[in-house]
Amino acid sequence: MTRKSLLALPVLLCLAASAALAGGALPIGATIPMADVKMKNVDGKELDLAEVKKPTGTLVVFTCNHCPFAKMWESRIVELGNTYAAKGIGVIAINANDPKVAKDDSFDVMQQRAKERGMQFPYVVDATSNLARAFGATKTPEAFLFDKEGKLVYHGAIDDNGQEPSKVENAYLKLALEAVLNGGDVPVKETKSIGCGIKFRS
Amino acid sequence: MSTIAALVLAVSAVLPPAPAPAPVPAPAGAEAILAEVRKPGAGAVLVNVWATWCAPCREEFPDLLHVARELAPKGLRLVLVSVDFPGAEAETTSFLTSQGVDFPTFLRTGKDEAFVDGLEPQWSGAIPATFLYDANGKLVRFWEGKASYPVIKKRAQKALDTKETR
View: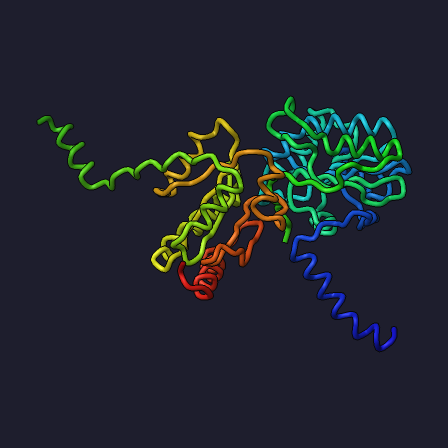
């Protein structure tokens, strides 16, 4: 490392720290972080994001059991996940909440929920909450969609109406999934919704 | 007077009166909340976005109210915004009453994205979320997740110290 690059290092570290403090989510165009970290799935097996990643595209959804916002969108998350997993998209749901803070976010309840809802994709535990930190995820639910090249092309809400599915005007995630499948441009790349703050493990 | 009636009277004389019911939160979008922030007279304004079912929000509530009561004489104004769902008005008002809230509060209306970005583009939408404005209505700090009494008080005090009251 040159002297110049050594001098630049603290500046880069400060920039990285300030991005994290500002709640900087993974930027559009970024690749999947921490893809080699094993996480426990509801079927008891361990898997990482590199195994979930598909050449067609990959959908990562941070969600949980207890949050009313996650529950509101839950059937839509499962329907989208099952539909697009069948079409070749790699799909995974991740629970990063500390069950000591939200007891309904325990592994047992995750297993029960995955079974009840008929999830045909993995629902795993982010046991350190570090995956959520690396993605810059702050709440549940929060979706990250990567295209066939493994680049982030959509981040945000499932759609624009959690409370009334019949009144959804913009099905953001579905439109993004269709674009990824068909090789088109994702129409809206970043959206927001109100959600439960992730109960990060300390 | 019967013995029972006398007993009831005696007990009610020593028990504190039941708190007055909190006002039902008024529906408001981001613009209405910001208008509340900019109302003249405050030395600083804390806006807290919460929900009855949000455990960290409920845990933080007494600390927020404690700070608001202590610093109200110095000009701090607290604006509470519930994101509870329609139909939960009774539960929301009941919680506010249990916390001794006796001032007007708000219930978020409209779509999520318009509300989140309208209030503050830096906000991801996670709750609880707290926004601190100075006397000029300028955002000086915001945080997602709950904060403790000393942290909230220190931040609010700093905002009060930096500006003159409008």
